[in-house]
Amino acid sequence: MSRLARRLQRVASPGEPGGFIPNLINNPHLGGYPDATNTGVPAGTTLTNSGSLTVTTNGALIQNLNISGQIIINADNVTIRNCRITSSDYYPIDHNNGNTGLLVEDSEIIATTYNVTAGMSFTDYTARRVSVTGSADGFKADSNVLIEDCYVTALGIGPDTHNDGVQTTGGSNVTLRHNTFKLGGQTVSSVVQVGNEWGTNSNWVIQNNLIDGGGWSINASNNPADNPNFQVINNRFTRRAGYGPGSVGGATWSGNIWDDDGTTVPG
Image 1 (cartoon, rainbow, N blue to C red):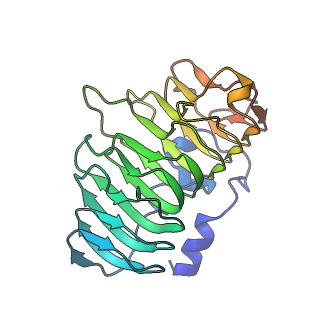
Image 2 (cartoon, one colour):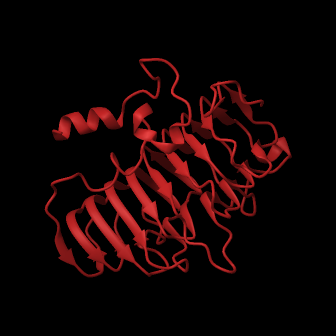
Image 3 (tube, rainbow, N blue to C red):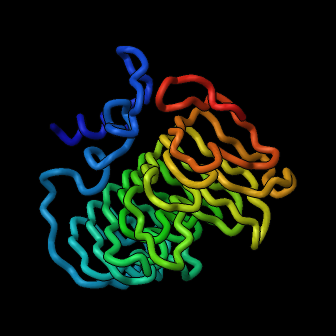
């Protein structure tokens, strides 16, 4: 498959042209959703082995590397592309130093221990077509974050982990769009855990994702004041959540369906 064809497959609408396909969680790509076939390093990419890196140049491009260790970001507007990062570090991509504009795309984050806190963390980044496995959380997303066309599965479960596909402790302007969170069958807390320890969670958009697992799949405060302008729209949920699809005070729920039969998920 050409790079262009692969890209088109990745951004395809999840509408199934031949009619509704039940249980897409088994093969997400059949409905245009991300999975191992259409995220991560593109097939045929030649990677150069590397150890840990520290990036200090604004606008730097890090690409086509097979990294054992971590990337420490001490610059703005850094792009990481076509990289495989295999790590036991707390932060495989350490973007926790006040920098902005990080873009990570067509890359894989493979944690080798549940002591890895999350594939990517905290603020001011975009993740696109990134696959994350093995870490305690898939992503930590506090403010000014876009996660789209990504695949999170097989988190690292430990005796004291509180595993989530995406976790925040409070922040604004976070969009989760067209991702697959395949976490059913694991003992995870939530697919999306929205805490408010450090503030309200304003302007959150959870849109067009394939969502599987958790206690509550989406778990947030029941107080609407903690979740201003919070939208959960056009997602596809499996029934493998312990309590149900979501508990979010004041959120707008619209267009969400069950993965097995296409009926409406109650808001």
